[in-house]
Amino acid sequence: MHKRNRVRVLAVVVAMLALLSNGGGTAAATANAASDMLAHLPPSDAVLYVNVNRLIEDVAPRLFAEDAATLASLNRELDNIKKETGFDPRLIDAIAVGMSFNADAPKNSKAVAVVRGRFDAAEVLANANARLKPKDKLKTQVYNNRTMYVGATPNQNIAVAPLDASAFVSGDPQTVREAIDCNGSAAGCAENSLKTLAASNKDAFLGYAGNNRAVAPLGAMLLGINSDWSKLALSVQEFNGSISAPGNAADLFLSMRTESSEQAYKIAGVFDFMKAINESPAEMGASRPGLIPLADGFGELLLLFKGLNVTAQGNEAQFRLEMPFARILKVMRPRSNHPATLPPAPKPPPPPAPRRSPAR
Image 1 (spheres, rainbow, N blue to C red):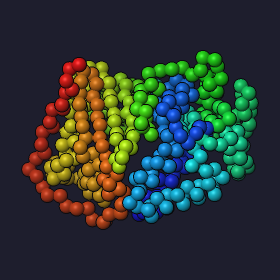
Image 2 (cartoon, rainbow, N blue to C red):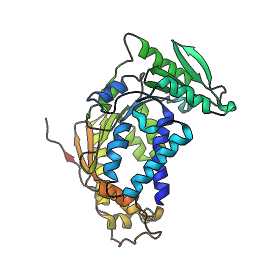
Image 3 (cartoon, rainbow, N blue to C red):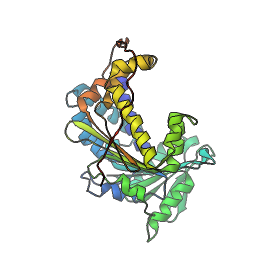
Image 4 (tube, one colour):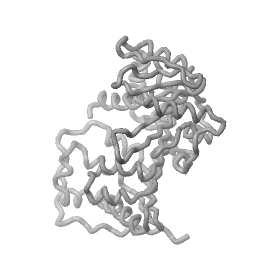
């Protein structure tokens, strides 16, 4: 990937976060920042928390400490976003996203996002709407003492509204109203185990959790509706994970709770097999000869997962991976258009049995 394109991808991610929502908070996140943000969400099938301020101000500078040119380019792109949109993405502190899925009508699935930052939420929304072209401007209406900006046509199925002085919510009109209602009531938004799970790693800059209703569409999208892997994925009743960045590495964690211990053991076995072929690229090339040529450097991409730790205990499978920044940068750097040829091997190794955690 060309360096400028690589930087643009990073900047676009930040821009998407800025467009999703708007909110308030302080630069120094408290230990309960994730819990506080997720508490704003109405009941959801999947929740996500991102500490954007930490990602931009702490993780990115450490990740690109040895690549000053890329870091400078990223900062220029953030400046361009501010210049073009009038909004500085560096002012975002955190974002919480909630998703609800309808198995009978997948197109009716909904998402809502709450963003908190160092700005006046009402002012930001008013300025953003004012900058839109006349045909794209959102209509204003008052709901529960808040000014909502709502799409003027069926194609604009979106609404945004302030939640408080430094936070706003974005999503479809119905979900935004639900968020306003639960945030405005004395009881607050409904608590559930997903919010607790997504905020369980206090050191993470990203946390997430979901239930079985979230697994079904994700499994179908990533693995195919009728694949054996997709069917195995449907046995997952609840999942959660996080990403933190201690030192010079990213620490990834994922936990899946299934209906039975046998299903957890099978899922752990799949990941353990992936670990084996990732750490034995020669065998991988022989067993899946069409896999490596899909993209330049695909072998290096898979090496990101070198050192994956897999365990299974009862009906829960857990996966943890420490991903050094140097390995991430190696994948991101431009490569030759001719992928390296891997030596053949007679056959792939059998999948090793996953390690079981000692009984509690």
